Image (cartoon, rainbow, N blue to C red):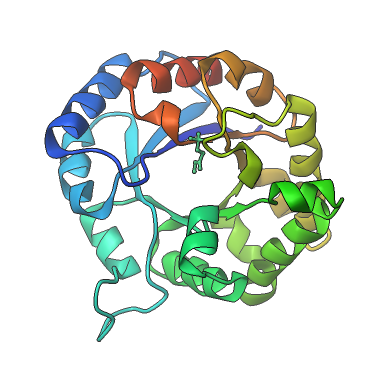
Amino acid sequence: MRDILVAGNWKMNGSSAANAELVAGIVAGVPKGSGFSLLVCPPFPYLAAVVAQADGSAVKVGAQNVSEHKKGAFTGEVAPGMLGDLGCDYVIVGHSERRALYGETSEHVAAKFQAALAAGVTPILCVGESLEEREAGTTQSVIDEQLDAVLDTAGVGAFAAAVIAYEPVWAIGTGMTATPEQAQDVHAHIRARVAEQSAEIAAKVQILYGGSMKGENAAGLLTQPDIDGGLIGGASLKAEDFLAIAEAAAQA
Ligand code: 13P
């Protein structure tokens, strides 16, 4: 079966000292067992230090964003090859905060997804609906548009080396977690959408849930058949909170 991935998206939080303490705490507390892995995604300036600190441990490191370009005159951007060069295994693309606050379109996200893959960095593609979209009954069509943009550009084969994260926008940072059933419904829909193009890849692709996941609700979510991990914001900033979710993953 699919392994569970517990990924922390630190967003724009941390400092050299705070990160060192957080990573030391996580590394020291990795639960025993198999079938799961842990990932932390610090802000760009701290990637190299966190990669060095996590080296040799079970904790992997990823970035939160990436350019769709390989190199050149793109002031302020970070190329996918640079992430690979630093030792990043993953990169988040299309987070709802990037889409909403920085105007990233699904086409833009698809280009970033492909660029990351080409550089050997595993993209974590985020999809998810807003509260208005859910209330209007358009959850599935919103997710289809976000997913299809990448399926159409990169091809279903790309998902053999990628991760999907379902993050309902209304659940992010609000404390309002999707119920395990609500999340499972959407995860099953996403998997079915991928299966329309390849049943084999759909069966293997990890689909993470993100949105106010914490120690108390992790077990209920992670034991759903189509939920293969978590993308965690707030609860990834304290080793104790992150490890509580890791424990749930180790037992799921
Ligand atoms: P919270 O866990 O803080 O709701 O954030 C989720 C998220 O956006 C992870 O990418």
